[in-house]
Image 1 (tube, helix red, strand yellow):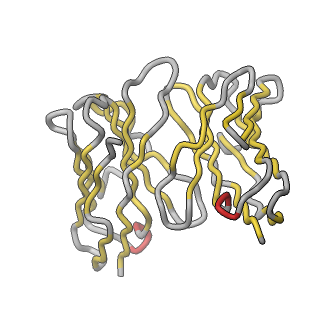
Image 2 (cartoon, chains in turn orange, purple):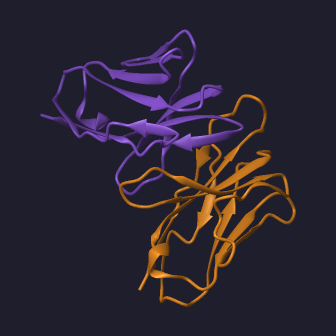
Length: 116
Length: 107
């Protein structure tokens, strides 16, 4: 079964440093999502792409977070500078299409970020 | 008010028992409903979609009540392997996640 690929699996960084996460969605999936999940909470949407365009980044802290999906395939999420409160699981997901009825999301393994 | 709310539990049940829990949502225009399962420190995985007429998948039954704006999940004949957090996902255009309901099945 095709999977969403994410890397790295784990990342430890010091506060004020830059960190980047990479995601390769399931082939053919037009919609790509980045979620952040803090322990004990549900995933929170950071940014949603439809092909290479941002559809929703209303919850993305734009002063320090950026995301791109230049060719409409894989995507990178960057944090600069990292803060202690950014420690969380960062999940990438993809779905075949965006429309009136949402398709289920397929998640990657996630990147567990620890900021020290 | 949160868009999607779940009883966090935990629901501690013996093997073989039936357990059920609900998820309420605030946006009456929601069109898509899913249940995901998440094991500790792992990614969420789709358990089942929820359809208007209700649907079953083996020991799992999902129901949708649009009038009262909630969905439910029922697990029959619980197995140890059903121990997990169950996330409710609801939306239209944008999907929102609940914080999850933790189920622990004991031997």
